[in-house]
Image (cartoon, rainbow, N blue to C red; front, side, top):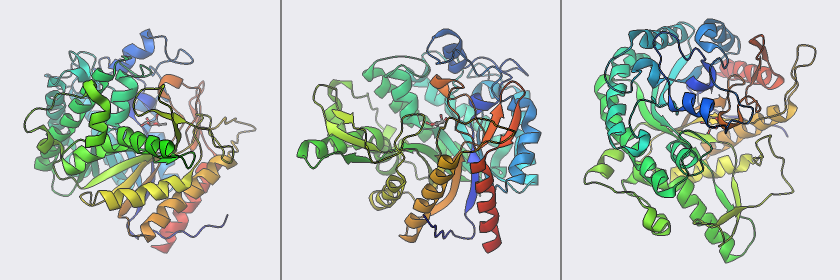
Length: 446
Ligand code: FCB
């Protein structure tokens, strides 16, 4: 397929990672455990029984990693800050050594002309916080932690995101039990989701007060739902699936209320909302980062709980190693729809997009043509959405390098750079080389 890309001159291309997935050094320089350290070590639910103890050893190898990012022509890099490095007990004493690490990282990025995109929370909650996200006070603790970080890094960060994927933290962590803290209870998941949204709402004014130029926002995972047949029931399953996955988070942030149909569908499981919560949660923001991987292709199945949506395999599509359908059209459709339905959001960027493949290092090379095509087609989808008037400012690939893929441990590789874990050697994959050349081409047009 031939491509026809058209991006604004100030558009950023780069990639993303997160702290627990790459840093390692879990006991160094004052860091204390997060819920993920405990979950990885004790739950028995990581596919290969691995942990993030060493991961990509980025805590030590970051200068080399940044040099590689320069070589790959990145305009931007999205990383997350580990709360348990900065405030090891979640609240109270600040660990300067933890802050120093991110201070150095940000300066080194700026020296290389790479715009820092910082996420304050990518799932590594300090273990010491009582009750985790089930406790409303955790939202206040998050605002305090935000203040400590933004006072130090401030406007040197180009774009601040409060949370990564509150949907995933809440649903996969508190209802499906596949992520930390491993709970399996819908009421708890919806309570956690509300406290996460509240944490975002409390942190926005803190970020605003300490910055003038930086963009302030959040990162949400998106999944467009399509009926798998022409029946009314399949159409309803798509509407309900969309409510649970997308609108439950976009509506509070953009409009200040939960979606009424989804609220009704959740029945007795809905969270307690206190006066003033929704006004905080809907504080105006500058941008929303979007994580897109796949779509929902569904039939209604009343034997499963609300949204009664059963995923159907599409024989016409390719699937990644995660079992996720490759569907670039869904990214285009979702961007156009989000801009139409949420005009309150002034800017979007792709904070994550990518594919897990069964990569192999052969003669020092990794050939991953399917991932290269995935990137070509999804970047085209973004370009097409921009042509239709969707305001977009960046495209960040997930991930810069292979890393600890949560419940899948090291059995899934998402990098555009291959990591040979025993030697910690980095090898740019075919897709990574394509991306680097693509960015060079875009820069030449600016
Ligand atoms: C997203 C996460 C990211 C990574 C990708 C594959 O949900 O934000 O850390 O695991 O999925």
